[in-house]
Length: 85
Image (cartoon, rainbow, N blue to C red; front, side):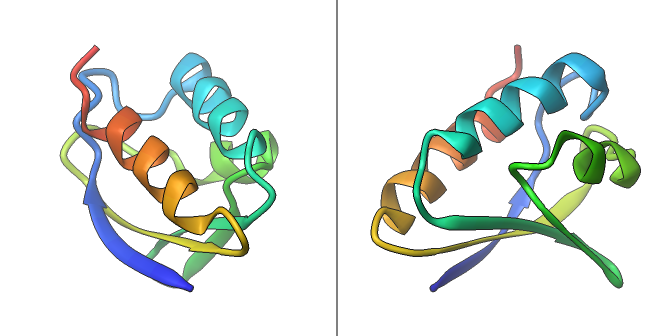
């Protein structure tokens, strides 16, 4: 299992379209992927779960991946969240 803090560098934060894209990226991997902030922990492959977080640009989340392709999943999601689209 990999667990890392990641800063959201998307200019709009995680609103509907960026959340959909993040869920799409997470869903490409077999590993379990979760996003945590404060007491909340949601499945990154769940669009409804991700929307409940209402994350803004500059917020720091804890991204975790667990499974056979956890390294690749973590790398792809970190790259997506770190890019300023």
